Image 1: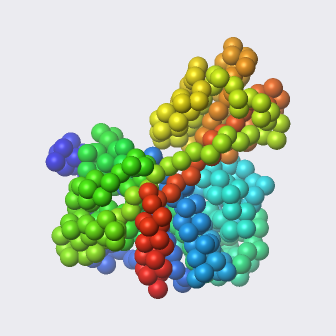
Image 2: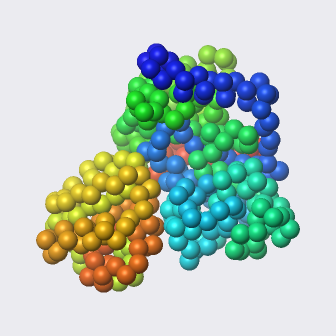
Image 3: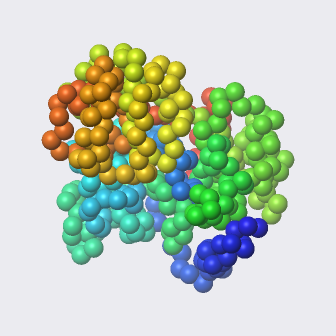
Length: 376
């Protein structure tokens, strides 16, 4: 109710926009190949990139899709290039954005591309021959790519001009949408009721010991009744079936940001942490169990690190000469863009790989079967 009163212009603009798409007053098209949209209704913090990676692992382990050409299409937030671009493993976050670079580094054999227009991007990925003649793709450096059999759309839930085959919306367990507000009062960038239009809801960053009763309680709060935790599905008030899954995050052993990284620093007792993500609290909690965090630099999400930022970090590193300097997996893509960093700082810089997984193997099995069913 507070959003309708204090933020009425923003709330009304969103209602009108969705009304026009829902009632055919604005054009909607579908891609020529199956597409899976991974998105949210909040500003960051739900783990879209780790879930995109989990989705890739799920598809690549499935006999139906293992031999197919799977592509990932992202906007490439804060990149300096324009138009459609194929992401290369030796590229930079400045060229393609940090999240596409992270995915490409982990899955070098997968086609990863960026394009502000998801519809045009899907068209180029499914018909790569158009790249040779299209004026809109003239800035594309690498136009040799295989035709995609399936496209994963990273952060495209608000891109309503393209209708995906399967839509997945992420909701942060630590910040429920039903307790949040529209920006700037909260972190919602879209109406919370929009989660009801998704085929699948994934509640991310859940505690690992979450039980069936807690899952049912969450489902009811999200507008899903008669939730069956074993089938991971329930019914919305309009009678439509909706699937809800629950995932958690885990961290792997630290890895060096640069080849010069000295692994002995991983065994240090003190740590300097810097990050430019929506919420690094889970990482801080994880690292606190092994290190004493003596300095914490908290930059805005997708922050482009400057020389001044790096020198401030180096100054603190000099004050604690035996400490390790740690950052996030997404941030390290942008750190690598920084030129002429001192070797003694490169030797101490590490990142903590992040991974998301379902709370049980049974839930993973149901998810894989559900996904295949929806893609048919």
